[in-house]
Amino acid sequence: MKRTFKMILLVFGLATAMLANPIAVFAAPAEPLDESETSRLLFIREEEKLARDVYLTLAESYDTQIFDNISASEQNHMDAILKLLNRYGLADPALQGIGEFSVLEISDLYTSLIERGVISEAEAFLVGGYIEEFDILDLWHAMEETDEAQLDKVYANLCEGSYSHLVAFVGLYEKLSATDYEPQIMTDEEFERALEEASKLD
Image 1 (cartoon, rainbow, N blue to C red):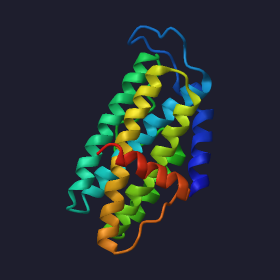
Image 2: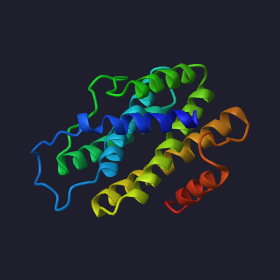
Image 3: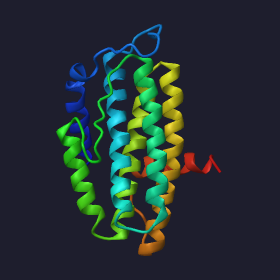
Image 4: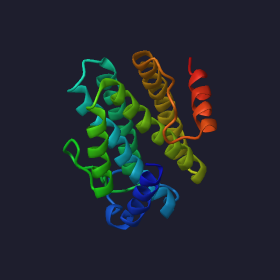
């Protein structure tokens, strides 16, 4: 599954030219984003929609409040990224329907995560952890790749939310399963870094 996300990001990058048509919403930035920044920003918009849509769908299967709560948070993340797209004159790649995506590989991933998440509540919590791990890793990479203060600020804020989400899913999984959560995408070092960052938010 680690390779899956890398391949999705590659494919999404190739589609950037088709998705990034200028639109006049806000004044143009002093300096336009480079190709890497543009591709990453567009992908993060789809990525946040993936998270929101998965949580909304899983909320229909379980009474646990976390899926409703975090799906609302992911909507806020989507809104923050949309403001950046408007700021930089980029067309929104996100489709309106739940589970509908402009990149086939993301659509397929949504399907596979839902199929996994409906197996059991514990598995649904693992799906949540999986999504948050990837969100954090991608946001870390995005911050490393940009020197745009506006992007960096929003990405950092999204990271804080994802740290909290990850900790919540880890705690619920461990409580329900009585087993330790093992990182699914992150290395052990990256996982510990995420937990440490989360602890700073308390």
